[in-house]
Figure 1 (cartoon, helix red, strand yellow):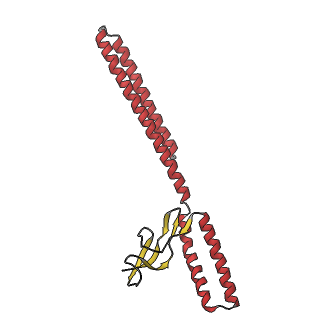
Figure 2: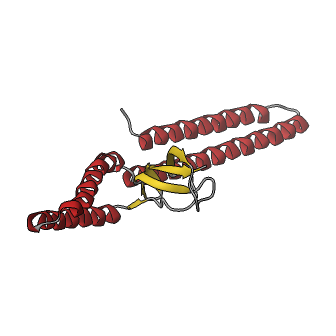
Figure 3: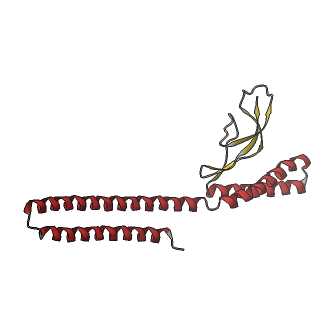
Length: 192
């Protein structure tokens, strides 16, 4: 399968060949007109052919501009695809981070020397995960304040004193973004 650059190059080549063929036709027509005895009709034909030539040149310029615009758009899309190529891999790692965070929080309940060392190891692992994620543009989505359907997924609506309707009461699962795009929406409960 040909790549897009080759397809567009062939398209531009065909359009150029069509313009050249049109110009050659016009030259032939102009030669026929010049052989006519009537000079005034010849001048009219020349003007008509010049207008056709200008029209063909205009079509060629527009086709070339369209080609350049398409080429730039595909170049931009290529870089976006590169930026978000690891999105699925990152999404697959989120449950691992969730499990580590749960283990880290539950270690507080039964602190002894062994549990403290395990907790410290889990804490270091979490910090390394977060540093790697930040390096690749992955950040925790803000789960405080007002509910935003673009970044939050409301699991429950609860009565809550001190919270206005639509404010986030509790976060059940953290949300993450990758370079500004939602990787996973935060699972939250909101006040009624």
